[in-house]
Image 1 (cartoon, rainbow, N blue to C red):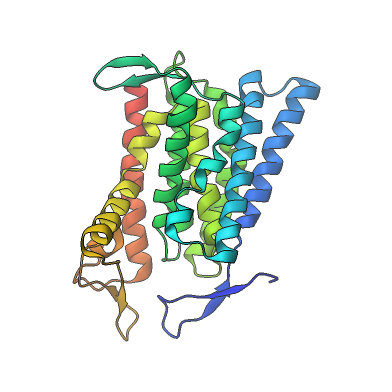
Image 2: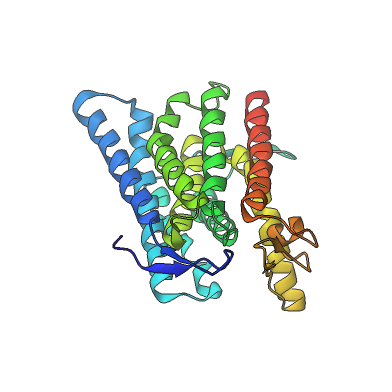
Amino acid sequence: MPFPRAIDYHKPGRPTVPNGLGVLYVIASAAYLFALHASHAFWGFPCEAVARGALPLAGCILFGGFLGLLDDWMDLRWRYKALTPIIASLPLVALRQGNPVMATYIFGKVNFGLFYYIAIVPAIITITTNTVNQLGGLNGLETLCPLVVMAGLALATILGPAKAVVAEMAILLAVPIAALAVLGALNFTGRIFVGNVGSFSAGITLAAYAIIANVEQALLIAILPYVLNSSLILLNFFIWRRLPRLSMTSEGYLYAEHRRSLQTLLAYRRPTRERVLVLKIVLLFIITSSLAVLATMLS
């Protein structure tokens, strides 16, 4: 394959596999979203709300793919990489996507006005993208976890109350979900890596779609494992200057002697196969995404 190869550090013998195939997700998703917009312009299908959301979502995915590709190429430091998703929020801000009236758990519905576009939208994009990008390193994490969240957001849109969401908006995620499923099957079996171009674009897809489809609260619940993982990593780094690390036995089992991330928390003094560890984490996302769908239906 005409892709650079990267070392799979969590396999015996440390084989090399093609890296950066997340660019295929970017191309397929963006082309599909542009086609949706063109279809509405020429034939009136899909509805105007879907067509209006397709362009900014495509722009965000393209921005995210480029920034991820830049990171794969230049290996940016975290202090710079953490802020780059702000650039990817520009299509949403420029096209005024999202509803500035947001439901809060304490003060009810609040109209944030211009503050929503200049602060809340960039914050949602930046936080979501960075938390998604921080949960990686094992085959399947960078594809299956966002796939589960993406499917949960689509269901939340379809099953949510009609006054709050437009069910047809889920059409926007049809090809992104299909592309991520194909890459996820290859990634989980250890045949490819999607690279930062994949994790960045997937994370931005989740955040941008949640804003466009007005399912931000569902996103917040669905990404709780991401938030937990990032909180553990950042607390350990800023307080004790320690980073998470998985060790491997001679039989290929993974284990950890500390609890500095979600992966090391689940593998703490408990040797386990890589695939089993990945499936445990994916199960957490299935639980939180199901709760997100339920919360949207009951809201």
